[in-house]
Image (cartoon, rainbow, N blue to C red; front, side, top):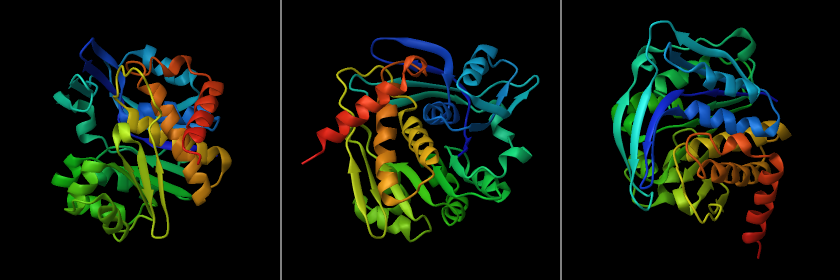
Length: 301
């Protein structure tokens, strides 16, 4: 089954303790779409770029089988640019600059062929934009969205309206606490469930992720890596991998979502091993399957 990814397509500048890269391919939509593409389903990407966006990047996305009819190129416009710097342990990231450019007034309209896409992942974007996609979709089977602290602080009313329409909310631990005013993740998850989502998935960085519903709890650890190169996009890769797997088996049961979270964790682990999507270019599905089995064995008792 097809996956629709709505997110940013950006040119990133990333600084780590060992290296700096400029204008590399990035964005929540890109990371999620590339991750979803590993599972063999059609992946459709909605986003916007400027005239300055390299054709080599869109060519790469095309080679991954990602449908780019929903990627708008604004003549004379400048692409979204973001810059960030990581500390030595990669646990803290400082934003150096954010230039929204063509994203600032983007109002996406779904192509007719996209409207019946059953699996929707609304990557980090203004909640009003995310809600507009839901209203255009005609037959969604699963709606998953991500958000961030900026929207929680600046557009809470719109975000609350969005939460009433989604099946799964994905956010990180600090965002869950910010959204609810709680200091405990389990209490925070329970409060979010009362706002509409049927499931809350809370990302905990190097400590993995947890899933909470009204009747279940699941925790998956991060895949153990000996070297971290660039964590940018890991959360989006996690979500994209999860969506890709669910669409490939056409199942949204508790068992399926638990397996999907493990697959998402594994795909994200490859993302971290290189800048931008450089590592994903070389990954074979056999490697993903191997790490899945390793992680599965690591938590067996």
